Length: 210
Figure 1: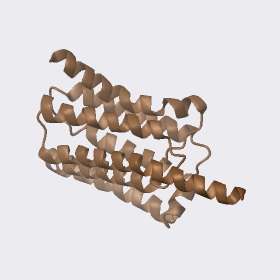
Figure 2: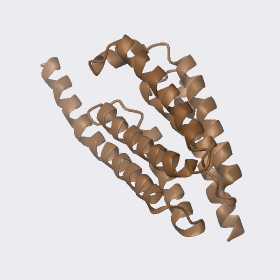
Figure 3: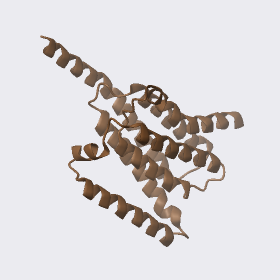
């Protein structure tokens, strides 16, 4: 059982990095920078709220690796302008900056207010943010036939491992399990949309060729 748990924990830490090895190797980062920023924010929240003794070091390493990884991805991602991506969602940069500043101050305020019962505020916030990231991934990539399919396959595998770990190895709150279940659902939805998007892309190519 200990060996099984160790394998699950190692997969949880290394999985996110393995997802992006092909993109990093080619130096062609196609992951959306908005998602990277949200993942960094979510990981920062988790660093100071997770208190399960049996998983504390694993969660710490997992979130530190996510922060370092997505910071590096943002540095490598020269082809995609963050401001352009924001405009695609009809958000002006100044409003986005205001949102970031407001969010940061709100998080700092909530942190000091909730020093005694911080988990009751930040646990649901973190779980909700993870679901939002999974949903945004689906919105970004559902119609893109050129999406990095290996990234989502490994991501699905990683979320299933996380689900097994949280459901059968350690005890966590039910809403955190629901959060992981929703992430698995969106991963599967993205993979299911791949065949449809690829078929439509092929039809467009044939029409253009004619």
